[in-house]
Image (cartoon, rainbow, N blue to C red; front, side):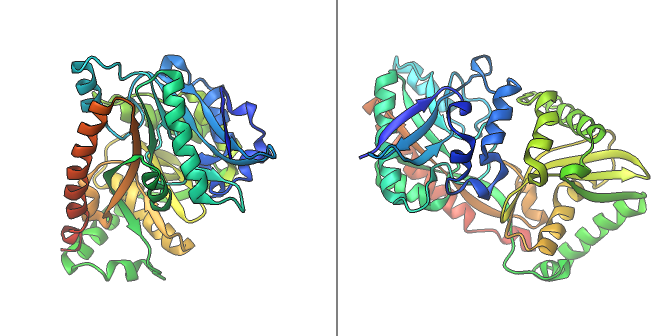
Length: 377
C-alpha cells in the first residue's frame, strides 16, 4: 500500500531525497534545483496559472518510493499538449474544465520520466498507485481532470494499463544510431540534401560568424543577459508567444544547473549576434530557446540544428530534441517522433468523447510518424 501526499512547494521535499530518485539524472529540468528556481523567481505561481502540487508516494515504512512534479492549472498555457477543444466541449456541456491537474515540467515539451521512482521499487506498481492517486485527487479537489505530459514510452504503457487515456503527439527528433563523424550522418541523405546543408554551413562561416558551445562557468553574466534578450525578442515576435520565464530565472538557473545548461553562441568577432539556450541530459540534448539580434541567412538552422547535431555526434549523445513543432525540421535531418501524454477526465460523458477522439488521433499520427521519407530526399 502507498500513501499519496501533496506538497505546495518543492522545498517541502528534501533535495537529496528528490535527486536520488530514478530518472532525475536523465535531464536537468527534473532536478530539485530546476523547480526551486521556477518557484523562487515567480515563474510558477497562481497568477501564471501554475500552482505547485508536487506529489510523493510513501510506503508503509514511510519511505519515499516515488515523486512527480505536478501543478494545479488555471489555464492550458505552457503545456504544449493542446486541449483547448476539450475545454470548449466541457464549457458547452456545462462542465468547469479549469482548474485541472497536470503532471508536467512547466514550459518544457521534452520527453523524460514524469514518475521519479526510487531504486528497487516496482515501476509498474508505482504507476498503478499514481494513476489511482490522481483519480482520487481529482475527486477530492473537485476538479475536472488530471494529465501526465511527455512521459517516456515505458511509463506511458504502465499508466495506460492503469486506466489513463493515452494521447499521441508529434515532434521531430534527431537520433544517433552510432555515428562517428558528421559525414557519417550526411551519408544517409541524398546528394541534394547533403549539398544544401554544406552550403548553408559554408555561407554562415563566409560571413565571418563563428559558432561555439559554452557550458557551466563559461556562460558569463553578460551572456545570460544576451540570451534573455534573445528569448524575449523571439517570443514577442509572435502573437501566440508568451514570456513564461523572467530575467531572474535565466540568472539563477545557469549557476544552479552547471553543465546541465548549454549555450550555442553565434558571434562575429567578439560580438554575439545569436544564441540557443539548451539543456544537456545524460543521453539527450534538449533545445529550448533561440534568438538573434540581427537577421542573417541560414543563421537559425546553424545555431539551432547543424552545430548541435555535430556536437551530439562528437559527444556520443543519443538524441537531440530541438523543441515542439516545426515540420521544416524534417528537411534538416530530424525524424517524426511520437510523443505521449495520459489523461483522466472525471465526467464520463466528456471522457468517452475524448477517448473516442484519441483513438482516431493516435492512428493518424502513427501513420504520419511512419513516413519520414521527405527528410532523406
